[in-house]
Length: 70
Image 1 (cartoon, rainbow, N blue to C red):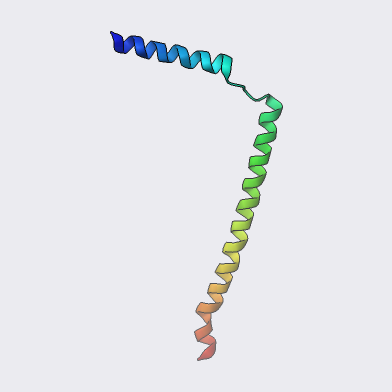
Image 2 (cartoon, rainbow, N blue to C red):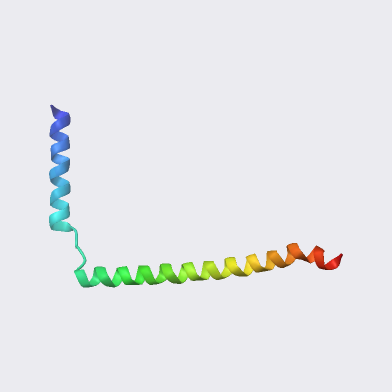
């Protein structure tokens, strides 16, 4: 029975902490943070794409080089 009382106490403490102690962001703050994260993700993806494209082009050139030399 002590086990279930401890679980119930933990749940009540968690609820009280979430309701009274956690500072939740406003909708405006949440939207701004989301826009920043999405923008950074898109920029990062574009940088990785460009690096991949450059290395792919270089490797294609390197692999075709023996054809040109013979």
